[in-house]
Length: 408
Image (cartoon, rainbow, N blue to C red; front, side, top):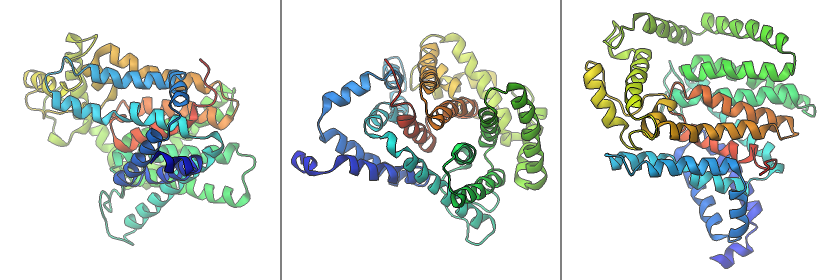
């Protein structure tokens, strides 16, 4: 096996595998995982371990990622529900198993290819979404006519779509070498993807879209902060109003959120009953904070959120359903691993933002800052570092955005 690997052009093999992975990430769990397994096996059997090890230990970002995973493993020591704890650890394996491997095999010269492959997959997803929406093809998998997100739920789709729109807009505004054909193609998809954002139902992704657009405006106008603020206050409400007036789904979701907030009754069932998702999130957060107050430093353990939440829910809000996820990454980490776990998680984002300033490449610098900022916002509404699609995309892009300019 080792002899066969020695004859194999590993760099070219990794090149094609990473392109395929970038394309499959937003489309299929099994397809992406198959490529990940092939990449990991090749990496483990290809030798040169000292060089790989040195790359990993010389990266503060990778060390922060590995520590974040290890704290989850350590948190199993004081957890009661070991099986659920192992389930959580399994979901976090990208941070120790995949991130370091990708970091050592990605190449700066191929970044535009990786990104293009990812955008091609999102464009394909968008086209399928429109075909379902216009009833050219029947609904399948996660897609419905009212909420056409075929390959994943809208909870994951809209944030990923927002990131894809950012990548396209960044190319349109900053790539001076872009051809007229590519400019026209990207312009079309920037518009069509933006429309697609508001005919699908992911409110967290829609909020992320507005955050992303605000960041992009500041990047376009550079140091003109006053002008940037004025532009944001004009553009964001304008797009919001246009989407509200033209998209029935977006209007319904906005109205529903507003109604849920108004009718929320402090922990008791509102007039909206079990469908009050905003009210549920508020209650999840309140109850989670009650658990955190008693376990501030190291939390209740990696696997004990469901158990501890059920206990507090029975006391404080017995009419509300139990949950194994507070739909807030910060609350989940604080309950499970306390301030130690939160500090570990935030250190990843700290290093991402800090390292981005070391790059002389505007694309790397801008995207390197935008990716963590978008996730920091997204994670207020769900545990996006546990989801397959979002966590994989986070790790994949992080593997090359912060690689070649890190200093120890």
